[in-house]
Length: 431
Image 1 (tube, one colour):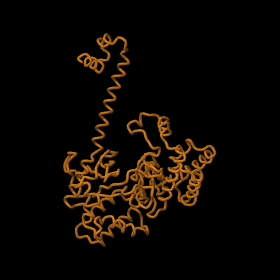
Image 2: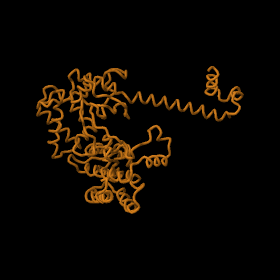
Image 3: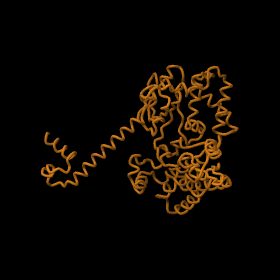
Image 4: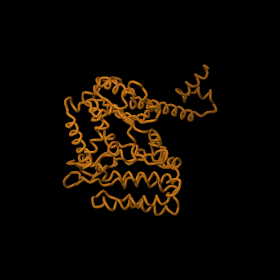
């Protein structure tokens, strides 16, 4: 045992020593140096992964915060009792990509779910990660005590107008919000219930999920407690069914990514069905019931599907309302188009004479989606379909966001593509 420890010590710390060469004459020092470097790099990666995990994953802090405010009577919600008293809503695996936006897979009454809540660093009582921040002072400050139901409805209506525009359907949306806020179904909304639903509406993803609830292409909202909310779990959270882990993505060339995607992708008819769902989603959010919405990060990691291969939008945080983007662009100084970018790829044109951003997004949702679908659909496509499919996708990818093209031309391109795919899989087990 002592000899083994001595050998490990020599490999790790003295790869070029003469003693090592004499003990292992058949092994060249350069190979041992490679082993030593491999161990060093592996240890560094493991350390960074652990450090990143502990920073990103604070589900226990989230639960402590929410339950503290629930016990004080500050907040309410349909899942509060299960989370804080009966412990039947359980956090399981961390899926967070930001310390302030906690995302976990979980279990609620023996059903797999997704749990989401926010942790704002600026509101912590001190620097300790486990301390309970006084979020009730800022986040749950509205409505105030004494606000009447009519005043609260007016607050909601004005808020929705600022986010979604002055849509004729907003009154019905306000009624639905009031219905969700009334957790105990007594026909009244308590102050805790009102504060909770108001805090939830400040979250872009929740607002969009609630606005698009009638569409089958977003996750179902199952419950909430304060600004924590629970949704259904989408089994496949990448367009290709599987994705390269984030820490490996920079290390692998694009051709390897492509091979992995093709290897794990569903059969082509199922990919066609998923694609039809994605195109329907684009159709729904363009001049929908509550205005226009823009996909501001078109990525295979933001779209997925369920076990029946029905398309589901995984990450609505990458979708923005037209009012939000127009507010961002209004009066914004620019030197070039990139200065007029909201999110990752919602880019408008820069007026170089006026040095201000214009209001129209250059690339519409449909063009971005067709860019995603090009590799997804062309690989393994039926030979008799491939040429026409490639032609239609190419036409789709060249669409612009100018108002003159946004109506008839976009609808024509989208319907042609849907029809082409649907004809191939209709009347089969994949339809």
